[in-house]
Length: 410
Image (cartoon, rainbow, N blue to C red; front, side):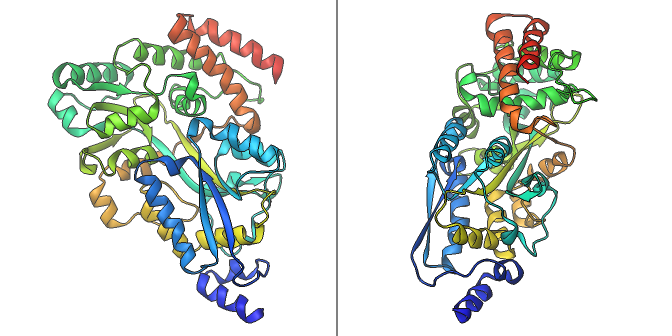
């Protein structure tokens, strides 16, 4: 048994981390179910899955199995499954869901998988109440992305503010026939919309809490952010009714000129379609202040019957071989360790460096001090935004009501 363990450690190439993991029975077939919404992404999902499949070369007794869940349904489905004592062995979660599952004691400590690994700052929030329950999968910053050829054909500059965004989008529509700008805008895609909207909120200086940690949803900054969103919504430059997967596909098909998207979504747009990666551009958001990032964590379910094997898999993924495999598939997203972009990728994707620079000043989509309650709080905010853009309620009035409900509930 010791000989088998030493052989496994050597194969993993991450001696310090793997050696600390519990011994496992050799050759016993094991299936690890890995849940992720990204498995459904065109091309990028295949590339990410292929990166994980490399683990089976050094652990042939392990079969990795996808649980692919649409992003709009992911939080509810995973919460329901784990609440029923079921679900995947490993889940890749947006940080809001991670905090909720950690608070519900659904996740197991990952310290043994992370031993000896130089984790970077993207892993800091993976420690919950003194225990490492999550490690970073990806951190994706946001940028204003654009189709270079459509922008050039319209003869417009890259916009730096909302008025410039509207003007550029209208020029693109008038001169090329393409859609001017794409954006999430529906409660049916709440989890994605609230994270996207944090760019507008942060961009106008919103913090959602004051210096004493009290919720402040109706500040002048928040009102300005909602008013700016309504101005864009009313400008007839957004494909109203299209969900984000549809909008991304239309961007990939060279039918949209401008969008606010994260680095992972941009990689999906720039991969394997009629829009060449070199024709994609990325710039700072058209707001006065920096925006947000999306953080995805890996966690192991306490209901998993294969926790030791799951820990061994994460140990490999955090090691040099696993991180390099993930880097090749993840594009410009920041990973758990500081593995750099390859020169070949940067040359083929000139937009990548912009995301790396924007990530340095971006903020978490979670509200400080209310991490586990952020989705519930932001639901009140996004319901207020919906009232503004659909029913014509004044931004201040809608946010005042959201503030009143938030103080009553939280």
